[in-house]
Length: 283
Image: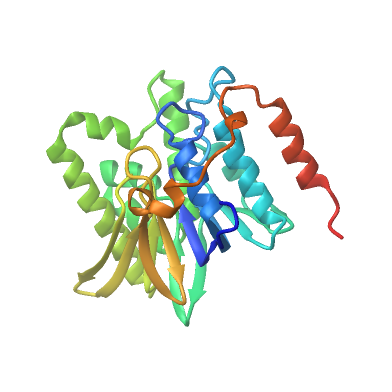
Protein backbone atom coordinates (compact mmCIF):
# COMPACT_ATOMS: atom_id res chain seq x y z
CA UNK A 1 0.00 0.00 0.00
CA UNK A 2 3.06 2.21 -0.20
CA UNK A 3 3.10 5.06 2.33
CA UNK A 4 -0.69 5.30 2.54
CA UNK A 5 -2.07 4.96 6.03
CA UNK A 6 -4.08 1.83 6.71
CA UNK A 7 -7.70 2.24 7.70
CA UNK A 8 -8.28 1.61 11.40
CA UNK A 9 -11.20 -0.71 12.16
CA UNK A 10 -12.21 -1.87 15.65
CA UNK A 11 -13.74 -5.21 14.56
CA UNK A 12 -13.66 -7.02 11.22
CA UNK A 13 -15.69 -10.17 10.58
CA UNK A 14 -14.88 -12.40 7.61
CA UNK A 15 -16.56 -15.66 6.73
CA UNK A 16 -16.77 -18.17 3.89
CA UNK A 17 -13.39 -17.45 2.32
CA UNK A 18 -13.15 -21.07 1.11
CA UNK A 19 -9.39 -20.91 0.74
CA UNK A 20 -8.20 -23.90 -1.25
CA UNK A 21 -10.99 -23.74 -3.83
CA UNK A 22 -11.07 -22.28 -7.33
CA UNK A 23 -13.90 -19.93 -6.41
CA UNK A 24 -11.99 -18.05 -3.68
CA UNK A 25 -11.02 -14.48 -4.59
CA UNK A 26 -7.78 -14.60 -2.60
CA UNK A 27 -5.96 -11.70 -4.35
CA UNK A 28 -8.91 -9.37 -3.71
CA UNK A 29 -9.13 -10.54 -0.10
CA UNK A 30 -5.41 -9.95 0.36
CA UNK A 31 -5.72 -6.41 -0.96
CA UNK A 32 -8.53 -5.74 1.51
CA UNK A 33 -6.54 -7.13 4.43
CA UNK A 34 -3.54 -5.02 3.45
CA UNK A 35 -5.70 -1.89 3.44
CA UNK A 36 -6.87 -2.19 7.06
CA UNK A 37 -5.48 -2.32 10.58
CA UNK A 38 -8.09 -4.24 12.63
CA UNK A 39 -8.13 -4.32 16.39
CA UNK A 40 -10.01 -7.61 16.35
CA UNK A 41 -10.36 -10.01 13.39
CA UNK A 42 -13.10 -12.62 13.64
CA UNK A 43 -12.92 -15.46 11.12
CA UNK A 44 -16.47 -16.77 11.18
CA UNK A 45 -16.20 -20.22 9.62
CA UNK A 46 -15.39 -21.85 6.27
CA UNK A 47 -12.05 -20.09 6.11
CA UNK A 48 -10.11 -23.05 4.72
CA UNK A 49 -12.36 -25.39 2.75
CA UNK A 50 -11.33 -28.72 4.23
CA UNK A 51 -14.14 -30.53 2.40
CA UNK A 52 -12.56 -29.77 -0.97
CA UNK A 53 -8.97 -29.23 0.12
CA UNK A 54 -6.33 -30.69 -2.19
CA UNK A 55 -2.56 -30.26 -2.17
CA UNK A 56 -2.83 -30.02 -5.96
CA UNK A 57 -4.52 -26.63 -5.65
CA UNK A 58 -3.15 -24.22 -3.10
CA UNK A 59 -1.93 -21.06 -4.87
CA UNK A 60 0.55 -18.65 -3.34
CA UNK A 61 -2.15 -16.02 -2.96
CA UNK A 62 -4.10 -18.41 -0.69
CA UNK A 63 -1.03 -19.07 1.43
CA UNK A 64 -0.32 -15.35 1.50
CA UNK A 65 -3.76 -14.69 3.01
CA UNK A 66 -2.91 -17.12 5.85
CA UNK A 67 0.51 -15.54 6.22
CA UNK A 68 -0.95 -12.05 6.43
CA UNK A 69 -3.46 -13.11 9.09
CA UNK A 70 -0.69 -14.67 11.18
CA UNK A 71 1.33 -11.47 10.81
CA UNK A 72 -1.60 -9.50 12.24
CA UNK A 73 -1.30 -11.55 15.42
CA UNK A 74 2.22 -10.22 15.92
CA UNK A 75 0.90 -6.65 15.57
CA UNK A 76 -1.55 -6.72 18.50
CA UNK A 77 -4.57 -7.83 16.46
CA UNK A 78 -6.67 -10.40 18.30
CA UNK A 79 -7.67 -13.15 15.86
CA UNK A 80 -10.63 -15.36 16.75
CA UNK A 81 -11.38 -18.37 14.55
CA UNK A 82 -15.02 -19.53 14.79
CA UNK A 83 -15.56 -22.91 13.21
CA UNK A 84 -17.91 -23.63 10.31
CA UNK A 85 -19.05 -26.74 8.47
CA UNK A 86 -16.27 -26.78 5.87
CA UNK A 87 -13.68 -26.53 8.64
CA UNK A 88 -15.66 -28.52 11.22
CA UNK A 89 -12.70 -30.74 12.10
CA UNK A 90 -11.38 -27.75 14.08
CA UNK A 91 -14.37 -27.91 16.43
CA UNK A 92 -12.54 -30.42 18.61
CA UNK A 93 -10.04 -27.62 19.34
CA UNK A 94 -12.66 -25.19 20.65
CA UNK A 95 -11.11 -23.26 23.54
CA UNK A 96 -7.58 -23.46 22.10
CA UNK A 97 -5.51 -20.32 22.68
CA UNK A 98 -2.09 -19.36 21.47
CA UNK A 99 -1.19 -15.79 22.31
CA UNK A 100 -3.74 -13.56 20.58
CA UNK A 101 -5.18 -16.46 18.51
CA UNK A 102 -8.31 -18.27 19.73
CA UNK A 103 -10.45 -21.07 18.31
CA UNK A 104 -14.11 -21.16 19.38
CA UNK A 105 -17.45 -22.46 18.12
CA UNK A 106 -19.29 -19.28 19.01
CA UNK A 107 -18.55 -15.88 20.51
CA UNK A 108 -20.41 -13.40 22.68
CA UNK A 109 -19.04 -9.86 22.48
CA UNK A 110 -19.99 -6.76 24.45
CA UNK A 111 -19.85 -3.67 22.28
CA UNK A 112 -20.76 -0.40 23.99
CA UNK A 113 -22.93 -2.25 26.53
CA UNK A 114 -24.71 -4.17 23.75
CA UNK A 115 -24.35 -7.93 23.27
CA UNK A 116 -23.41 -9.47 19.93
CA UNK A 117 -23.83 -13.24 19.43
CA UNK A 118 -21.52 -14.46 16.66
CA UNK A 119 -21.47 -17.93 15.07
CA UNK A 120 -21.20 -19.48 11.61
CA UNK A 121 -24.75 -20.81 11.34
CA UNK A 122 -24.37 -24.14 9.51
CA UNK A 123 -26.18 -26.02 12.27
CA UNK A 124 -29.44 -24.51 11.02
CA UNK A 125 -29.11 -26.62 7.86
CA UNK A 126 -29.93 -29.65 9.95
CA UNK A 127 -32.40 -28.14 12.35
CA UNK A 128 -34.59 -26.33 9.83
CA UNK A 129 -34.76 -29.30 7.50
CA UNK A 130 -35.70 -31.87 10.13
CA UNK A 131 -37.26 -30.22 13.17
CA UNK A 132 -37.84 -26.65 14.26
CA UNK A 133 -37.58 -27.55 17.94
CA UNK A 134 -33.94 -28.55 17.45
CA UNK A 135 -33.15 -25.01 16.43
CA UNK A 136 -34.84 -23.74 19.58
CA UNK A 137 -32.41 -25.91 21.50
CA UNK A 138 -29.87 -23.25 20.59
CA UNK A 139 -31.40 -21.06 23.26
CA UNK A 140 -30.07 -23.58 25.78
CA UNK A 141 -26.71 -24.16 24.14
CA UNK A 142 -25.34 -23.57 20.65
CA UNK A 143 -22.74 -26.30 21.18
CA UNK A 144 -25.55 -28.86 21.41
CA UNK A 145 -26.58 -27.95 17.87
CA UNK A 146 -23.01 -28.47 16.70
CA UNK A 147 -22.98 -31.95 18.23
CA UNK A 148 -26.29 -32.76 16.51
CA UNK A 149 -24.96 -31.52 13.18
CA UNK A 150 -21.75 -33.54 13.54
CA UNK A 151 -23.69 -36.66 14.49
CA UNK A 152 -26.13 -36.34 11.58
CA UNK A 153 -23.28 -35.91 9.09
CA UNK A 154 -21.46 -38.89 10.65
CA UNK A 155 -24.54 -41.08 10.17
CA UNK A 156 -25.07 -39.85 6.61
CA UNK A 157 -21.47 -40.69 5.72
CA UNK A 158 -21.83 -44.17 7.23
CA UNK A 159 -24.70 -44.77 4.82
CA UNK A 160 -22.67 -43.43 1.93
CA UNK A 161 -24.58 -40.16 1.67
CA UNK A 162 -23.25 -36.62 1.38
CA UNK A 163 -22.99 -34.22 4.28
CA UNK A 164 -25.81 -31.74 4.62
CA UNK A 165 -24.91 -28.37 3.13
CA UNK A 166 -26.64 -25.31 1.83
CA UNK A 167 -25.23 -25.72 -1.67
CA UNK A 168 -27.48 -28.73 -2.30
CA UNK A 169 -30.53 -26.68 -1.37
CA UNK A 170 -29.58 -23.84 -3.67
CA UNK A 171 -29.47 -26.25 -6.60
CA UNK A 172 -33.10 -27.23 -5.98
CA UNK A 173 -34.68 -23.93 -7.01
CA UNK A 174 -34.40 -20.21 -6.48
CA UNK A 175 -37.71 -20.19 -4.63
CA UNK A 176 -36.61 -22.80 -2.08
CA UNK A 177 -33.27 -21.00 -1.62
CA UNK A 178 -35.04 -17.73 -0.85
CA UNK A 179 -37.30 -19.53 1.63
CA UNK A 180 -34.29 -21.17 3.26
CA UNK A 181 -32.56 -17.82 3.73
CA UNK A 182 -35.71 -16.27 5.21
CA UNK A 183 -36.05 -19.18 7.63
CA UNK A 184 -32.34 -19.03 8.47
CA UNK A 185 -32.48 -15.34 9.34
CA UNK A 186 -35.70 -15.68 11.34
CA UNK A 187 -34.45 -18.68 13.31
CA UNK A 188 -31.20 -16.89 14.22
CA UNK A 189 -33.18 -13.80 15.23
CA UNK A 190 -35.67 -15.72 17.36
CA UNK A 191 -32.95 -17.48 19.34
CA UNK A 192 -31.04 -14.21 19.80
CA UNK A 193 -34.19 -12.45 21.03
CA UNK A 194 -34.91 -15.30 23.46
CA UNK A 195 -31.44 -14.77 24.93
CA UNK A 196 -31.66 -11.01 25.09
CA UNK A 197 -28.92 -10.31 22.54
CA UNK A 198 -28.80 -7.03 20.65
CA UNK A 199 -27.02 -8.40 17.57
CA UNK A 200 -26.83 -11.82 15.95
CA UNK A 201 -23.98 -12.24 13.47
CA UNK A 202 -23.72 -15.15 11.04
CA UNK A 203 -22.03 -16.34 7.86
CA UNK A 204 -22.68 -19.58 5.97
CA UNK A 205 -25.45 -18.56 3.54
CA UNK A 206 -23.22 -16.27 1.43
CA UNK A 207 -25.72 -13.42 1.66
CA UNK A 208 -24.46 -10.19 3.26
CA UNK A 209 -27.15 -8.47 5.31
CA UNK A 210 -27.81 -5.92 8.00
CA UNK A 211 -31.42 -5.62 9.13
CA UNK A 212 -33.63 -5.38 12.18
CA UNK A 213 -35.86 -8.42 12.65
CA UNK A 214 -38.89 -8.04 14.91
CA UNK A 215 -41.05 -10.79 16.38
CA UNK A 216 -43.80 -10.77 19.00
CA UNK A 217 -41.07 -11.24 21.62
CA UNK A 218 -38.85 -8.33 20.62
CA UNK A 219 -36.30 -7.28 18.01
CA UNK A 220 -32.66 -7.85 17.14
CA UNK A 221 -30.21 -6.59 14.53
CA UNK A 222 -29.30 -9.46 12.20
CA UNK A 223 -25.94 -9.24 10.41
CA UNK A 224 -24.29 -11.52 7.87
CA UNK A 225 -20.75 -11.09 6.58
CA UNK A 226 -21.40 -12.65 3.16
CA UNK A 227 -18.50 -14.42 1.44
CA UNK A 228 -15.42 -14.14 -0.78
CA UNK A 229 -16.71 -16.39 -3.55
CA UNK A 230 -19.37 -14.15 -5.05
CA UNK A 231 -20.04 -11.07 -2.91
CA UNK A 232 -16.54 -10.17 -1.62
CA UNK A 233 -17.93 -8.65 1.57
CA UNK A 234 -17.14 -8.34 5.27
CA UNK A 235 -18.64 -6.79 8.37
CA UNK A 236 -16.92 -3.90 10.07
CA UNK A 237 -17.67 -2.31 13.43
CA UNK A 238 -16.20 1.08 14.28
CA UNK A 239 -17.06 2.88 17.53
CA UNK A 240 -20.07 0.61 17.98
CA UNK A 241 -21.49 1.22 14.50
CA UNK A 242 -21.81 -1.72 12.09
CA UNK A 243 -21.44 -1.59 8.32
CA UNK A 244 -21.15 -3.99 5.41
CA UNK A 245 -17.86 -3.70 3.52
CA UNK A 246 -17.93 -4.41 -0.22
CA UNK A 247 -14.61 -4.83 -2.00
CA UNK A 248 -16.11 -3.78 -5.33
CA UNK A 249 -16.79 -0.34 -3.87
CA UNK A 250 -13.31 0.06 -2.37
CA UNK A 251 -11.16 1.86 -4.95
CA UNK A 252 -8.28 2.21 -2.48
CA UNK A 253 -7.94 -1.54 -1.85
CA UNK A 254 -8.34 -2.32 -5.55
CA UNK A 255 -5.27 -0.23 -6.37
CA UNK A 256 -2.96 -2.14 -4.02
CA UNK A 257 -0.26 -3.91 -6.02
CA UNK A 258 0.57 -7.49 -5.13
CA UNK A 259 4.10 -8.80 -5.78
CA UNK A 260 4.43 -11.17 -8.73
CA UNK A 261 5.83 -13.80 -6.36
CA UNK A 262 2.28 -14.31 -5.05
CA UNK A 263 1.42 -15.99 -8.34
CA UNK A 264 1.91 -19.70 -8.92
CA UNK A 265 1.57 -22.63 -6.54
CA UNK A 266 4.97 -23.19 -4.88
CA UNK A 267 4.38 -22.26 -1.24
CA UNK A 268 7.46 -23.63 0.47
CA UNK A 269 9.15 -20.24 0.82
CA UNK A 270 5.97 -18.54 2.07
CA UNK A 271 5.22 -21.36 4.52
CA UNK A 272 8.70 -21.25 6.04
CA UNK A 273 8.52 -17.47 6.34
CA UNK A 274 5.12 -17.70 8.03
CA UNK A 275 6.26 -20.31 10.56
CA UNK A 276 9.38 -18.29 11.36
CA UNK A 277 7.19 -15.27 12.08
CA UNK A 278 4.87 -17.29 14.35
CA UNK A 279 7.61 -19.02 16.30
CA UNK A 280 9.87 -16.00 16.64
CA UNK A 281 9.86 -14.94 20.31
CA UNK A 282 8.43 -11.49 21.02
CA UNK A 283 10.84 -8.93 22.41
